[in-house]
Image 1 (tube, rainbow, N blue to C red):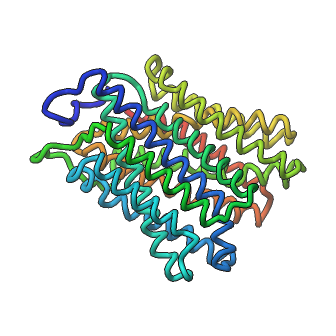
Image 2: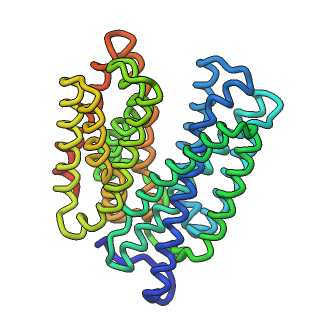
Image 3: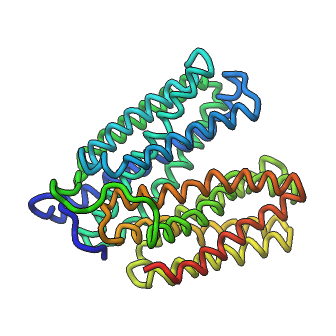
Length: 389
């Protein structure tokens, strides 16, 4: 499936060892999703705890993003030096500690450096477990990246649901984050014991950092388009149903759940599709489905149509990251971790740029028109898919 198998060890692992490693990596993706879901629910808690306005809260979120992007500059080299398993353990400890302390710092100047570390650790953890996933695909000859990212989606839903339930139970937010962070750290550390810990042998001529150019830049730009669309759906889908279509806020939340569930289920089923059909065709077809569904729901403006549209948009975007991350690892002359870090450095910008652009356009015109950015991004993804090897 991929190019030459990695120098994971002096002897190839047997099927039982590979099965254990696949299970471990699924748990790692779930742990990252749980952490992200819980954090998302508690962003308002951070705002209240430190008395922040919207502008200062945006600074906190941008600090996390800056940490994540800066981490991508050294993630490939770090994983090459200490291995994916040790990198995942280190990152899990740091990101869990920063989540646990997020509501306990004395003031904003203490919070910001911790958020920088939080973003950097999450980014390193993400690259390490994705690199492990591509190694598993290469060694086993089985498509697994879809199920791995499906576990991330399920973990995110579980983390958000758990935090919401604890809030309803009036558990103090600081205590919630400390408990969830401890659980995430325990899960990640336990799962790390079964990881393959594959990394390049000393003397490998593969680059451990690569500026995105050529094939890597193309893949990164396509991930960028996919993450713009995904980020817009995560941040604005509920408000669209509530503000533009008149749904009650309690009901509009169903839209987020429908989109997230469609992504999770499609990722689990996507591995079977990738084994039977060309990935380029799946990528283009999924993006086309997302574009048509989004355009239809924006034009018809009916709550039932919108919810059905969210379902198809989620299904259409689900395989973008699994397919393109794996495609990046086939670019010659670059280590897997470096390839993933390289395309992620471009792709992550989609999450940063997409939601604010929607806000500016919605302020200048309407949210319905602004949500058309999802259609534009999906069409660009469908057209660019033809050029991915």
